[in-house]
Each structure stands twice: as structure tokens, then as C-alpha cells.
Amino acid sequence: MAILEVQHISKSFGNTEVLKDISFTLEKGKVLSMIGSSGSGKTTLLRCLNFLEQPDGGVICVNGETLFDASNPQTRQESEIRRKRLHFGLVFQSFNLFPQYTALQNVMLAKELLEKEKPDYKARKKEIHEQIEHEARMLLDQMGLSDRINNYPHQLSGGQCQRVAIARALALKPDILCFDEPTSALDPELTGEVLKVIKGLADQETTMIIVTHEMAFARDVSSQVIFMDDGCILECGTPEEVFENPKEERTKQFLSRYTNG
Image 1 (cartoon, rainbow, N blue to C red):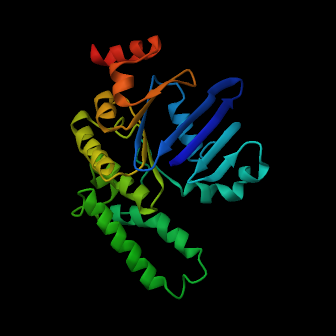
Image 2: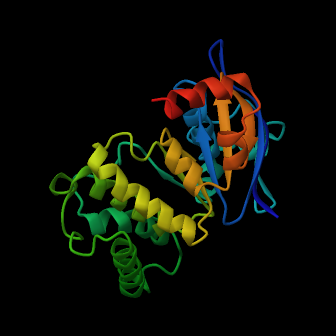
Image 3: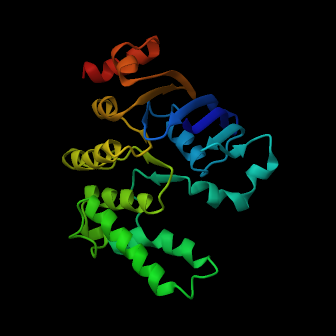
């Protein structure tokens, strides 16, 4: 059964149509990579899935629940947006860590803010805090950062900051973990450590959507690959189908830049 169903998503900014009738499904435990030239709509699609942008048309369903339906005004209400976002975790290309907080505090912050809204928070404050801290420490250990938990972002390398950002996204236990060019802000020597972490998550059957320019990585880690061009899904299939036997001429042109480079 599909964990994510995207049907006929469209999005325009002014007179520019950025997404045109986007539809796909993603099964639980699978990894979907989105590839394509800059400006093809990949990041906008990811932002629509995370409700950082609201689509103009279409339907988004997670686990059978309709989170967004452009024809239903109730699903477009601002009050619903934060709840919808909890289905998705987003790791930005530029980390977006809070500089005034340590690695541990960055990972704990969102979960603590959510718990504070619950009626029993004050009565269970100490217990809740200890549980959140325990889970955050385990996630940072999983990221290989157990010796960096008290470091601030300026004391960490770019690769370490990105691993903190991954731990932070995982802390809320999202159904789908999304990455927007997770290595684009990193030096080449730091790229490998972040890709290794993502590969480890894939091996644990974490459901993921990855926007990336790392073609070899996308081919290695993905269950499904989407090639986007000019706001459309031009090609969709397994890594073998898209990378080894692309059907569209535009896909062949795009991939030739990497295979011949």
C-alpha cells in the first residue's frame, strides 16, 4: 500500500507555472529520488509536500488520509498546516540550525514545543523532558555525533551540522523524511559522510524523498527515480529503468552530462 499519494499537483508563482499536473505514489520503506536540472520544480514540489508552499490544485494523501485537496477549502486552512507537516520531516540544504542552541538542544526543541501544548505537560514536565533528551541523544549517537552533543553549530563542520539536522527531522518521527539537496552546501570531502548516513537510513527502510544532483548516489540508494523537467515528471521508474534505459530524449541529454563528465 502506498504511504504517499500525490495526484495532479499544480503550482504557479504569478504567471509562471512551476508544477504542472504532478502525480506519483510512494510505498512505505522505499526511497524516491528526484533528479533534474535546477529550476525544473523539484524543490517547489518538496515544499508543497511539506506545506511550506500551498499547491494551487491537486490532492496529497498520507496513509490514506487526505491532507490536502484543492477542491476542499477545509484542507487549506492555516490551522491545519502544522499538523499536516508532522507527517513529513524536511532536511534543508543549508542546515537551518539555531545558532544559539547546542546540537542536543536543536534536536530536542521541536518535540518539546509540541509537548508543551498538551494538557498534562506541567504535571509530567520532568519525565517528558528526560524522555525527549534520551531520544535526542540516541539519534545523535546514530548520526555518529555522541561526542558533539554540547557543541554549537559554529563549532561543527558542515557535515556534522547536516547530521544534526537529520537527527532533528527524525526526532518528530515523521512518516516520510525529505531531503532538499542535502550535500549541495558541503565540501566534497564532507559529502560522503552525509550520504553514508542517508544510505544507512535507507537500509533501515526509512521512507524518504531525496532531491539530489548526486546521480551515482541516487542510482545506488533509490527504489524509485523521478526525472523532472520544466515543472513536469518526464520519466519515472526504477533506477535501472531511468539511468540505464531512459525512454525520453531529454532524460538522456540530462544524464549524459554525468556519465560523460
